[in-house]
Amino acid sequence: MTGFLVKRLFQAVFVILVVTLLVSWAVRLTGDPALMLAQGAGSITEADLQRIREGLGLNQPFLVQYGHFLWGMVHGDFGRSFLGGASVGGLIATALPATLWLTFCSLAFSLIISIPLGIHAAVHQGSWSDQTIRILTLVGLSFPNFWLALMLVLLFAIIYPVFPPSGMTDATSVVLPALTMGIILSATTVRLVRTSMLETLNAQYIMVVRSKGLKERTVLYKHALRNCAIPVITFLGLQFGGLIGGIVVVERVFNWPGLGTLAFEAISGRDYPVLQAAVTILALLIVLANLLVDMAYGLVDPRIRIK
Amino acid sequence: MMSTPPDTLPSVTLKTPRRRGALELVLGLLFAGGITGAVLLSGWLFPDGGETMDLAARLTAPFVSASHILGTDPLGRDILARVIVGGRISLTVGVLSVLGAVIIGVVVGLIAGYYRGIWETLLMRCVDVQLALPFILIAITFIAIVGGSVRNLIIFMILAQWVQYARLVRAQVIELRDREFIQAARAFGVSDLAQIRHHYLPNLLGPVVILMALNVGNNILLESSLTFLGLGVDPTIPSWGGMLADGRTYLQTAWWVSVFPGLAIMLTVLGLNLLADWSRDRLDPRGKA
Image (cartoon, rainbow over all chains, first blue to last red; front, side):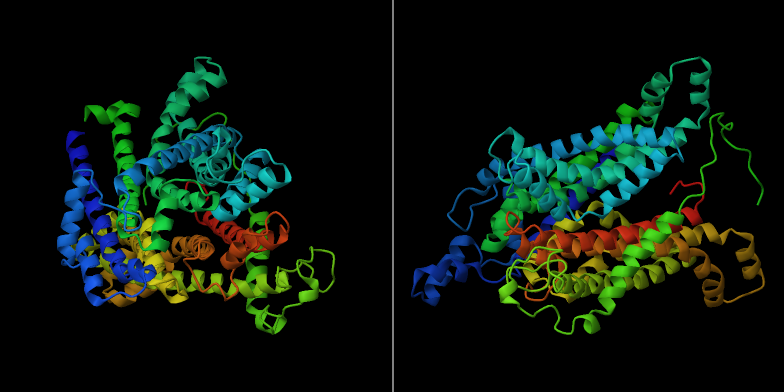
């Protein structure tokens, strides 16, 4: 188990290096931020531009800039925003909780609907309710996330104004964005719970538990559910990248003040340090989630702990 | 093959699942086929490309006027025409990106599975990287920077997805190697190329086609969301994502501008998912996949 975790830790570091390298390289393809910054300033000489570039460290070779970025990152310092000069670390620190909260709510919502639906479909395999759930999951898989977001706004913010359409004004603001991501995530989770449950229910120990005369509810929720958790957890880990990708888009639609919105604003303003930091932190979240999943195996499945 | 004894006793409550799927097939063909057909005929159905502005009929509600069944947008352009013409972009990106990825992926997967060795190791390292990297995030960053032409979108999707096919094909080839008919072919001295063409390819195409159908759908979703965010194709060309981005401003007053393009995306993707689901059921009757 320890060897496995160490290997995964190295893999995580490697992924972060590749992502940061790709992103640093990509942001340098955009063009000269010195020109962008100088645009509003009226007449500008080449010497002025040069001074701006030096001030931002843009005259150094790419690898040196990348090295600086990594060094700063390890020390929690992401530099200053090109626009306005605010500390990037500070911007990230205000945006990160919003993204984490939205991610948490989406996951929680998705699990609350997926587990009962998946179990129900497995127990009543082949019935009309199983078929209906199957078709519903396909519909869920086919929703463009931004369109589902718009439709939920139309329904619950315009036609029936129950929830705020955008921003993060009060506690109910999270409902619509979390609902959007939760529905889309559930489509795949329900199918997975169903398949995993079907396999578990055919195992011999379930027969033993049933023949002991336990109530069906105990059989399902106490004995079967725990054992079908591993594939579900693995899957959630693998899906986390997709979930974060979706959240970035949904944040934009709902004007949710998280890392996604920060990244998009940085893209339009060519604010390299902010973009670089936002994407890096998002990638870090994904890598951390996968590491947590690897560690969770030990908790869920004692056999792995012993090995 | 020898039949192995089952690991588990048959459960008492086990019901034989009903043979389902006729509905899935019909609906899948209806949605995906219907929309694809309309889009293919769009040049003939709407020779103006959905660009004619009927300013007197701006923001007409749907199902009111016979000449604008799905209503009009803020410039008086017919929504139905634009939805059908706009499908060209999404379908082009979806289909071409998948074709590109499948060609690369199948070739690499066949080589890696058939010859093993260094090819296989290289492929598996690519798989590790692909599984670990948050590709959507990187795609958004890159597309935002290099600009989202149709060509760039297709290239990114191919780069992101060929590994999936290679991985699938490699696994299938390894499984097929030990089957008797393949061993027989090898024993008869059939050349590598002939073995691959006549024995491997026909037997591994099923799952590849399913993955293709799913990915055409996924790529349509990805393209439309990038375009919606203003990172995809040129906003002056009618496209589903672009129409939704325009319609968003009018959500309060004219819901139809943003409902119908999204419905078109959803029905296309749903049709593809239904077809994939149906064929998966045929290939794997135990319903495990």
